[in-house]
Image (cartoon, rainbow, N blue to C red; front, side):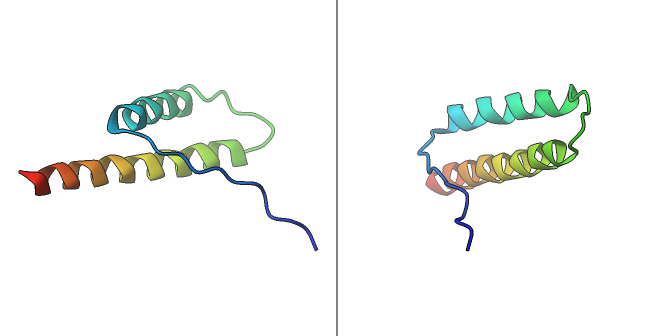
Amino acid sequence: MTEPFPTLQFDLDVEAVRLLHRSVSFHLEKWPGGPDPREQQALMAMKTLLTAALLEFSLDQDAQR
């Protein structure tokens, strides 16, 4: 039986998430293609995850007002 891929868990503040989101978005826009389209799919999934995190931050901030 194969072992699952190792994972890491991070605690990030909103500024770090914004920076990661901008970086992933930029990399996706400039993605030159390549032999493995799964890289582009992984970037799109990561961008979606980071967008969701930013929305979560926004909702938490609105709830505190």
